[in-house]
Length: 397
View 1: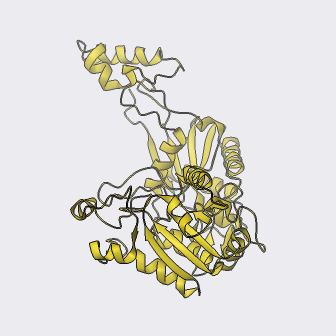
View 2: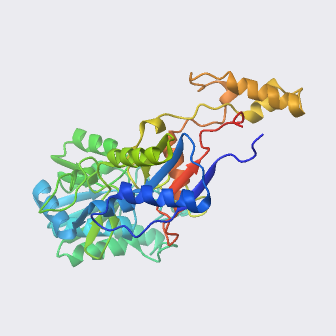
View 3: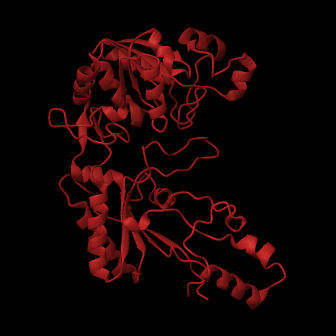
């Protein structure tokens, strides 16, 4: 029996610049890694490239001024409600700066006790002590301060209420801050709202429209087309963007399926094997200490080859060992389990006890999370991840 299962390798690459053909650069880096590390490619190996370098190669950037112009055109530039941003200097500060530059007044509604991805404004225990119900109670800043004081984010050292208010006012825009979770509250102040939540944006838009809002936008509706030569993303707009410089953001990349298909084609031709490929961003996992849910991008993978569509269809080995084959051991147990796996069909096992505990997440979410954990976001210099044996099971020799 082969003892090694899935192997994941971070692959170093040159520093990517605008105009580079990212598929060609990634393919060259992987083929060099094959030779250097003595890697033998196999069918259904996976190569993944982080969305950050794809966007950089595409030159998919936008300035604060370009964001401001789009916001002004789409909202009218008066009093605009801005709902449920995440608490992040990297992810949201320049977007808010652009909004403030395009409006006369912003009424900013911050969700509490935490934002959508788990950045806390206040601990749940403190809410209980103060008798505050986050589902029903909307607080002004003075009310929040009276109950909880100034709360500094433990990772960034920032009081986000002050930070966002100061940022808005620095653009010559009036700021009013509220804390609450009922998005319709903003309609007491304005009929024009930009909802900045990521994964719940469709519900927020629906609630606002049902409550009579005249203009309802999400971050996906801003820079979904170029403005004065800016980058853009027709599907996600500003969602998935990151701070690039003090005045520009890097947007989520475009045409990622085409990038994945070109990369897979290059490596399949070079190896004579069927190689799968994908573009990945944030992983879909939660930090148990900081309570931060990593997925601040709109999706884990914005583009992938067709062989990565679907969910795992796996048997739970420990269930088989403890139940169906509980009276076997040694070679007899191994042979019985191998036979069970070989007899498995492509029919879904969801709801079957034999697969209990094998959560049916999408393959691209699982693989993208694996890639994000492997490459990290610091100085490892491995924006490419090469995976072998992901689709193997206990029967593969």
